[in-house]
Length: 138
Image (cartoon, helix red, strand yellow):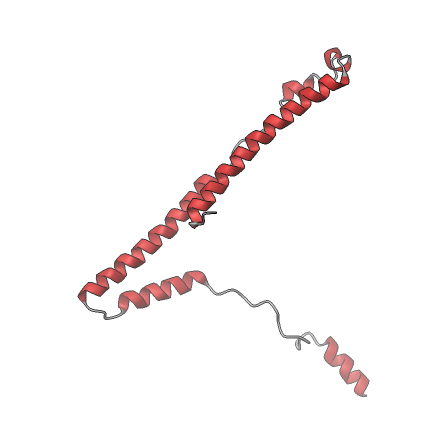
């Protein structure tokens, strides 16, 4: 009898065996809007109300600016650098087949190095955009 009760409790989906370890994150949008509404609705006097409105507007403008920098500088799709199709189409031709192996490897390696240099410079410009957007400097 005790064993059946334990098994029933163990398999009961309405009674979790452990506390949840992952909590839901706070709703950032509602937090910001609530804080902004409370700050603007407070009776702080004439000079402080203008300062609160200006500070809140400046913060929102900074947030929008950082999102724009990230979207334009980082998330916008760009061309990628790879070996050209004209180079690849030459592989089955006699000039590639009968050329010394070292020459073919060198030509391919040069193309890969050029592509790597271009991709690294693009990654550097994306990192710079993220640094500007987040205000982080290394």
